[in-house]
Each structure stands twice: as C-alpha cells, then as structure tokens.
Length: 132
Image (cartoon, rainbow, N blue to C red; front, side, top):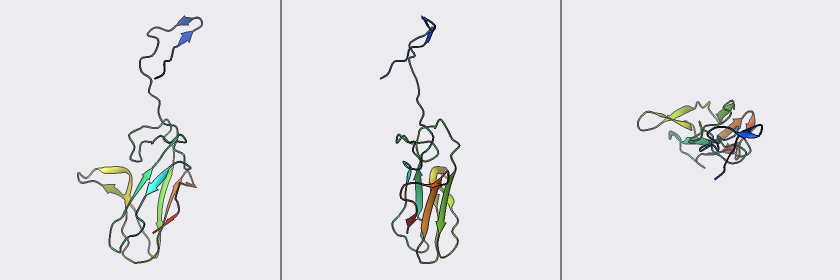
C-alpha cells in the first residue's frame, strides 16, 4: 500500500491523504505483448488468435482480453495471416454473440504453411511472425 499526501505550499490539501488512487497501465509495448495461437491446424477448421497487449511493466492493457484500461489507447494493432490463399480475420464471437477483445478467428481451406504476423505500432510483438 502507498500513501499519497498533497500539499499546497506548506499546508495539506483537504481530505488528505488520498484514500484511493487508481494507477492505469502505461501504453502497450510490443516487446512485452504476446499472443496465443495453435502450432498446427487442419483445412476447414477455425483456429483463434488471442492477442495480449501489455505495457512495458507487464500490466495487461484493455482491448486485448485484459481488464485494465490503459493510460494511452492510441496503439495501432495489425493482425495478418499470409499463406497459399488470402485469409481474412474476423472478431471472435463468444457463445452469447459478444466479441472477445483481442481475439480473432480465421479459416484456411487450402493446406499449406501460413504465417501469422502481429504488429503493434509497426513493431512485431513477441513470437511474431509465427508459422502454422
């Protein structure tokens, strides 16, 4: 626990010390962020990709399956799958039809090697690119 006392000149500010202070995660950082996806898949199946955005301290950032809001939400996330045929990604919809933040689903109908690339502000995150 931490105590924060606020002073103006030599006097304490009213209702001091603060009883509650919420610290938000910093901006997402590509060097700490990561993702989960299968090592292999079959033609016609629908594998998912789960992106976990983290700040440089390892705190989860909202919009990536985390419950923490970020102090900065201006990060650009790009999720790409390249292979023998063009692949389009769709947001993952749960059983109740709600989209799961940071989770994507895709389907490949042609067997072959596919490369998953996930970039945050133009920089590959951990384990990207990844071959399936």
